[in-house]
Image (cartoon, rainbow, N blue to C red; front, side, top):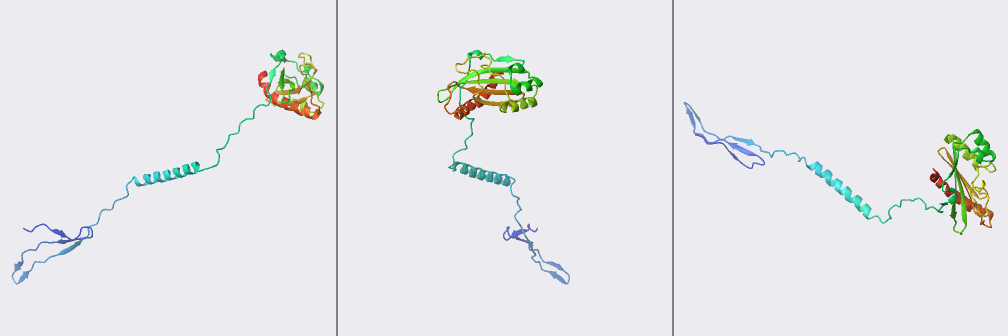
Length: 241
């Protein structure tokens, strides 16, 4: 019986399949010699695809490199970190005068106004008038008195018109409590001769007037300093409610 076929040659590049030698076959008038048949067989390594984890790992490596570069940029920056701006500190500290620890409230603004402002309030009645007097001190040692009046109008549009009128010269305003003699300050009978400021908060018009009995020799400098006090005093409107 013939043995199994065998392969010879390197498997990686190719192989030769050789059949076994067989006994001669005879027939009348014909003799067949056995022969060897060599068949080329090519064996190749199986094609292997890239593992599925190659791309994710590559992406992770790229991300790690980018992150390391960013950290290097940040750590290597000699510039100081950005500074977050803060609100400026208040220049003046205000104290409510004893007579107005409880603000003075009135529903009739016309009675406490004068000039064109009074005429405006006749045509456009307010909802409420709230007033108080504060005191503070300047760096020069002067004691400054500030009248704060909050006029509540029916709507913001009317409030803005009132503020515009109050800001104009010689148009009048609402009385401060010194003018009505509800608060007494030696050397002062009103605060409208000092510095003035006003603003609108929704439907409220806030009016601030400041003055000091100890006046600066320079009238312009005195007025400018009193105006600074009045501008900062506007923030006190929230205390009046």
